[in-house]
Image 1 (spheres, rainbow, N blue to C red):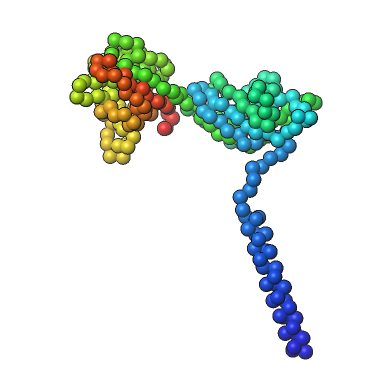
Image 2 (cartoon, rainbow, N blue to C red; image 1 turned 120 degrees about the vertical axis):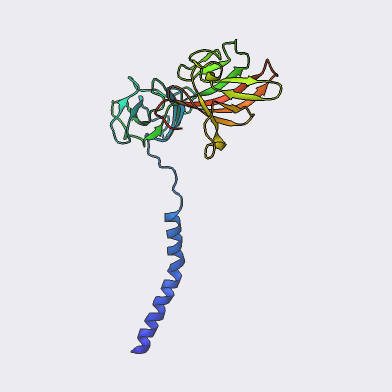
Length: 264
C-alpha cells in the first residue's frame, strides 16, 4: 500500500516538473510589455505639442478605407474628469496628407499657462459617436526665437514678453537688453539704463541653487537664463548665437515665457 502512494507521489512530482517551465513562460508573457491599445475607429496615441495660445494635436486611429466616418469631434476640458466643450462646430474631416490612420489639427484660441485636457470621439455617418479616446494634458506657452541688437536705437534692441513684440531698449514695455564692449558682454534689466524703466531680475539656470537674481548677468553663448519680469512673468532664455562685434553685435536667443502665476 505504501509503495502505491510513493508511485503516485513521484508521478505527481514528475508532472509538476514538466509543467513548471510552461507556467513560468505564461507568467513572463502576461507580465511583459503590452502593445498600444487599439480599438476599431477609436482615436489613440494622442499627442499635443504646445504652441502660443494652443497646441498641435495628433492622433492615430485604426480604420479602413471601406469604413466611412463623418469626421472627429474634439473636446477640450479644464480638468481630468469634466465633460469639456466641443472645440469644432462641425466634425473635423481629418488632415490632407492622405494617411487615414494618422491625423492632426492645430488647436488655437486657448490661454497661455492654463492646463487643458483634450480627447476625441469619432463621428459616424448616422451621427453616432465612438467611445471617447484617452485624455491627454497640455499647457499652451509662448515660445520662439529672438534676435536682439546691441544698438539701442533700433526696434529690435529689446522685447516685451507680455505684449509679444520687439521694443527699443529704453521702451517702458521692454523686459531686457544686451550690452557689449570690447572686453565684456551682458544681459541686463532696462532699469540699468534709467531708474524709471522696468526692473527685471536675472539669473543663470545652473546658478539658481546658490546664486541670487541680479539686474545684470554676463552674456555667454550656450548659457540659459531665467528672467523675472516686472509684471510677474518668467522667461527662460537660451543664448543660441552671438554675431558681430560692438557696436553691431547681435544675439539670437530661444525663449519660453510663463505668464504670471505659472511656474516654469
